[in-house]
Image (cartoon, rainbow, N blue to C red; front, side, top):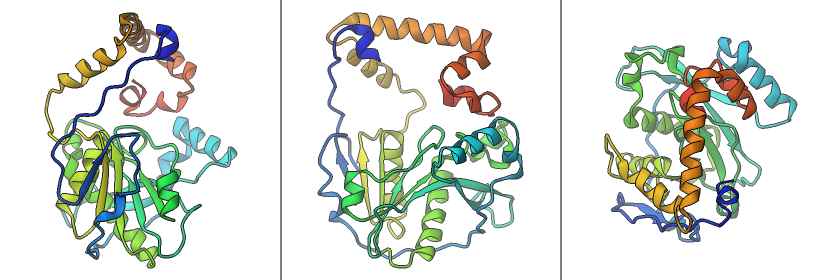
Length: 289
């Protein structure tokens, strides 16, 4: 759409190559992934997690409930749920239900588990790409806590956001891996996969939990965490303005218009983009923008 508005194709910038965690592989987004499984090393250490494949009761009604009904009507993948501690550092605290999807369409016994690391947005689908299919992998796609509908205890208050950390996210994924390896005992190895933030998480989980994840494929990961990241905006501006600065100007004007409509016509704006299910979501505005 942006290329159409500008009238000319934009020029892609090569991702910056950054130091990676041991055992991880850094590839540009279009690079061949045939070198993925160069490090498949260790068995897993498991942890106890309650299993519950039934969605939370509050998912039965409202905008979220209607979204679930639409998904079923389209014959799309069914969401699955796994009981998860709100705080992995506590053994007695409350639990919530992590949402995830599985793609078993290309899986064969003896194939690896590929974890499509969760990103900062809602989960809608989970499909094996060509690389995953060539490995005959079981593919799992979890939703990141505090994004989409995955709000622990339905509480997105500032106080509860202390549980929105990289460490808690990686612990969610590790617990899900443990559950799936118990359910599919033929899985010999686990690969974490992702791009951008989820790519960084793939590298981090390989480094932090080498006994859980055997290899990682990280595409363009921002590995150095920063409170402010203006370089990202600058990179986007340069890409959008090359070779025609009008594209960047159109995008800037469009974003300003969306910001105004989000204040004055929030529900109508989300419906126009087929995102009605975000209207009543606690993180709807963040996910939508």
